[in-house]
Image 1 (spheres, rainbow, N blue to C red):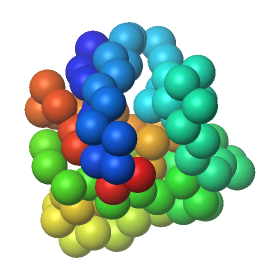
Image 2 (cartoon, helix red, strand yellow; image 1 turned 30 degrees about the vertical axis):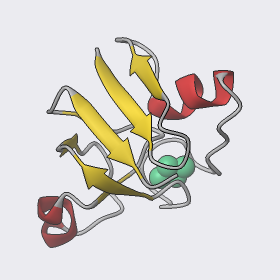
Image 3 (cartoon, rainbow, N blue to C red; image 1 turned 180 degrees about the horizontal axis):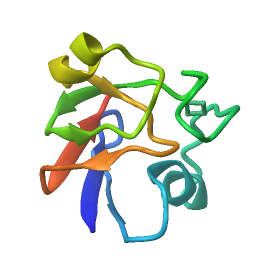
Length: 87
Ligand code: FES
Protein backbone atom coordinates (compact mmCIF):
# COMPACT_ATOMS: atom_id res chain seq x y z
CA UNK A 1 0.00 0.00 0.00
CA UNK A 2 0.98 3.62 -0.43
CA UNK A 3 -0.62 6.99 0.24
CA UNK A 4 -1.68 9.74 -2.12
CA UNK A 5 -2.24 13.30 -1.01
CA UNK A 6 -4.46 15.70 -2.93
CA UNK A 7 -2.65 19.03 -3.05
CA UNK A 8 -5.79 21.18 -3.20
CA UNK A 9 -7.47 19.66 -0.15
CA UNK A 10 -4.46 18.35 1.76
CA UNK A 11 -6.32 15.06 2.26
CA UNK A 12 -4.41 11.79 2.19
CA UNK A 13 -5.80 8.44 1.09
CA UNK A 14 -4.29 4.97 1.32
CA UNK A 15 -4.22 2.89 -1.86
CA UNK A 16 -4.30 -0.79 -0.90
CA UNK A 17 -3.04 -3.64 -3.08
CA UNK A 18 -5.64 -4.60 -5.65
CA UNK A 19 -7.22 -1.15 -5.97
CA UNK A 20 -6.18 1.70 -8.22
CA UNK A 21 -5.58 5.33 -7.32
CA UNK A 22 -8.55 6.29 -9.53
CA UNK A 23 -10.84 3.84 -7.71
CA UNK A 24 -9.89 4.98 -4.22
CA UNK A 25 -10.15 8.68 -5.09
CA UNK A 26 -13.57 8.12 -6.69
CA UNK A 27 -14.74 6.53 -3.43
CA UNK A 28 -14.01 9.87 -1.79
CA UNK A 29 -15.56 12.08 -4.46
CA UNK A 30 -12.29 12.98 -6.20
CA UNK A 31 -13.03 12.21 -9.83
CA UNK A 32 -10.16 11.80 -12.27
CA UNK A 33 -11.33 11.55 -15.89
CA UNK A 34 -10.60 8.12 -17.35
CA UNK A 35 -11.15 6.32 -20.62
CA UNK A 36 -9.12 3.18 -21.24
CA UNK A 37 -8.16 2.49 -17.59
CA UNK A 38 -5.25 0.46 -18.98
CA UNK A 39 -2.50 3.05 -19.30
CA UNK A 40 -2.88 3.50 -23.04
CA UNK A 41 -4.87 6.67 -23.72
CA UNK A 42 -3.38 9.24 -21.34
CA UNK A 43 -6.78 10.65 -20.36
CA UNK A 44 -6.05 10.27 -16.65
CA UNK A 45 -2.54 11.74 -16.78
CA UNK A 46 -1.99 13.65 -13.53
CA UNK A 47 0.87 15.85 -12.36
CA UNK A 48 2.93 14.50 -9.49
CA UNK A 49 4.25 17.23 -7.19
CA UNK A 50 6.20 14.99 -4.82
CA UNK A 51 7.09 11.31 -4.52
CA UNK A 52 8.14 8.74 -7.10
CA UNK A 53 5.54 6.99 -9.26
CA UNK A 54 5.81 3.38 -10.38
CA UNK A 55 4.75 3.69 -14.00
CA UNK A 56 2.58 0.99 -15.54
CA UNK A 57 1.42 2.94 -18.58
CA UNK A 58 2.29 2.62 -22.25
CA UNK A 59 1.33 6.23 -22.95
CA UNK A 60 4.38 8.19 -21.81
CA UNK A 61 7.77 8.00 -23.42
CA UNK A 62 10.66 6.58 -21.41
CA UNK A 63 11.94 10.11 -20.94
CA UNK A 64 8.59 11.32 -19.67
CA UNK A 65 8.36 8.42 -17.25
CA UNK A 66 11.87 9.07 -15.99
CA UNK A 67 10.98 12.69 -15.18
CA UNK A 68 8.53 11.35 -12.57
CA UNK A 69 6.45 14.53 -12.68
CA UNK A 70 3.27 12.94 -14.03
CA UNK A 71 1.66 9.50 -13.95
CA UNK A 72 -1.45 7.58 -14.99
CA UNK A 73 -3.49 6.89 -11.84
CA UNK A 74 -5.76 4.39 -13.62
CA UNK A 75 -3.00 1.79 -13.45
CA UNK A 76 0.24 3.21 -12.08
CA UNK A 77 1.34 3.01 -8.48
CA UNK A 78 4.10 4.42 -6.27
CA UNK A 79 7.66 3.52 -5.37
CA UNK A 80 7.65 6.06 -2.55
CA UNK A 81 5.38 5.82 0.48
CA UNK A 82 3.55 8.99 -0.58
CA UNK A 83 2.63 10.70 -3.83
CA UNK A 84 1.40 14.28 -3.79
CA UNK A 85 -0.92 14.88 -6.74
CA UNK A 86 -1.79 18.17 -8.41
CA UNK A 87 -5.54 17.65 -8.02
FE1 FES B 1 -6.26 5.73 -20.21
FE2 FES B 1 -5.47 6.10 -17.65
S1 FES B 1 -7.47 6.14 -18.47
S2 FES B 1 -4.24 5.93 -19.45
